[in-house]
Each structure stands twice: as structure tokens, then as C-alpha cells.
Image 1 (cartoon, helix red, strand yellow):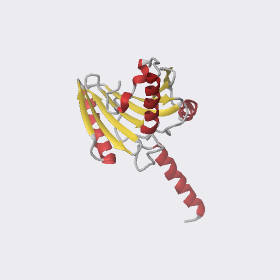
Image 2: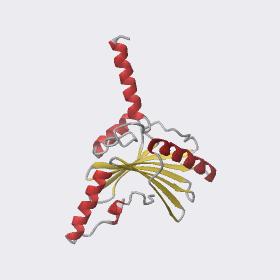
Image 3: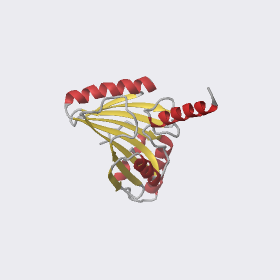
Image 4: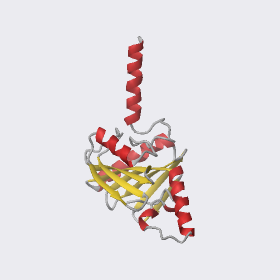
Length: 206
């Protein structure tokens, strides 16, 4: 095989790894949803634009929290989403990507239950058995802890919603420490900044 073919093969494999669902990527830098943790909101919008995706929400939740919601996914998924309203949610702290999520809303409870089983099987295949499971009202969450990341699968049968969250622990820890300092100084913390409060990665999120 000549050098040209070898280079082309390497390029194809690199592109496939970048836009596929998580496998053996560097979990410290890759969110597994098509974005690198720590990138700015501006850079994330450029990635979204390059993929031809539609931004359905771009909001400022507080002084330091920003949220972008995109129609569909920027990666290939190992599940059938034909009967699902799928969105990608990005959350930034201090203009750095802290968390990325896939939110699936199915059209009925049967499809929701089947999707839950597929997603659980897939994540378990990647990360092994979850480190924790919690049930609060109608919501069930499973959490996997891997280097620098918390991966959370949450299921809400009442709303036919499945959700996968990837939380970058170092940046989230910085947010918690900053908020603690603000409280010590007597500053009022905006309720919107309570997201992922106290590092409870498995708390249900809607």
C-alpha cells in the first residue's frame, strides 16, 4: 500500500472516530457528543454551523452559565431514533463547555422503554456496570464514573424522555468551588446556577 492510500485510510479513521459515539477516545478532552470539553460557546457554535444543524435555544441562565440546544445529534448513534424527538444540549461555565447531553423524547411509553434498554446496554458495554442507581419519583438514573467524566443515563417514563449526560468533572468542580467562595462572601447565588450542585452527578435533570 503506497503512502497516499495509507494517509487516506488514517484520515478516514480519524474522521470516523471524531463523529462516532464514544469508544476508546481520550475521555479527558472529548465529550463523546461531537465537542471538546473546555471549548468556548463561540467555537461550539462554529462546530454546529459546520454540521448544518439548527440551534433552537441559545440562552444566558446566569452570570456564568450559558446553554445551547441543537436540533438532532452531531454524532452517529447506535440506536434507532426515527420515532424520537432528539436534541443535543450544551452547558457552559465561565464560557467553557462543562456538560453535553442527548435528550430523547419518544412518541409513546413502549418506544421509550425500548430505547432505555438499548442505551443502558450500550453504555454498559462501554463503561461496565454503572457505579450507582437512584430512583426519585418517576425518574431513574444510572451513573458511570470514568476518568474526568461522569456519564449519566436518566429515564422519565412519565414524559417518555431518555437522557444521556456527560459532565466534565474538573470544570464542574471549579464551578462548585467558585460558588462556595461566593457563599462565604455572602453573595446570593442564582438558582439557575444550582445545576449539578454539590457534585451530585446522578441527580435527575430536565
